[in-house]
Length: 243
Image (cartoon, rainbow, N blue to C red; front, side, top):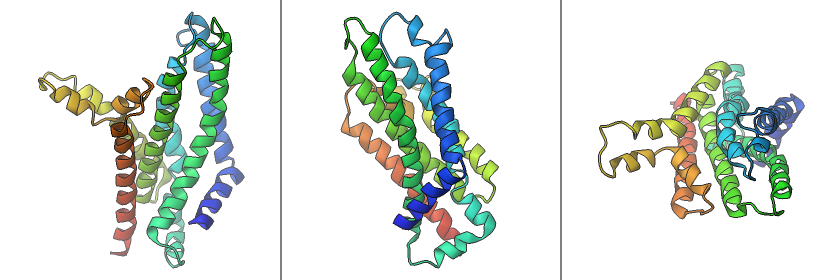
């Protein structure tokens, strides 16, 4: 698994994919947070990173499938997936090697955004008058959200040999799981607590819950369950090629 992990990391940064992904993520976030008047922190009048944590998931919906679309699709298209299967590694190790490599890239993209927290911390009056607990919880939520999107992207790449198809399917699934249940819960067909139960099936409800500064074990279990499920789906998709 370590060899596959290192190979993926090397491919990310040798083909500019890693650099482009990180630059695009930071550039788009910077424009929304500091330049565009409707979302600029400087126009809010109070120190908060709410705009950052509300915009970042939508960037991830497009950025992460772009990172993961080649993970297995390229291997299937070139036929090297059969070569990988002959190596002394299991399918799960192959999947986890590629998964953790993409997840590391997401983590590297998130780390520089701590400068936004420091900026807001310094600009607040008095200095340090920010909801540090809520911001820290939102960072945990954003990382878990990215981890789920990586698992979805890896799965989409494993079911097709076309990288564009993997990207489109990945964007659709990420968008659906993140927002669809929230909109479905607002339909008039759900009564009582049923609307809350439907909403809790989506990623946005658990992501928003972490943003309140309370890291609930139920939210963590939900994220880990989704990650495990899509890794299992990926393993099934790869195994089906032998069947």
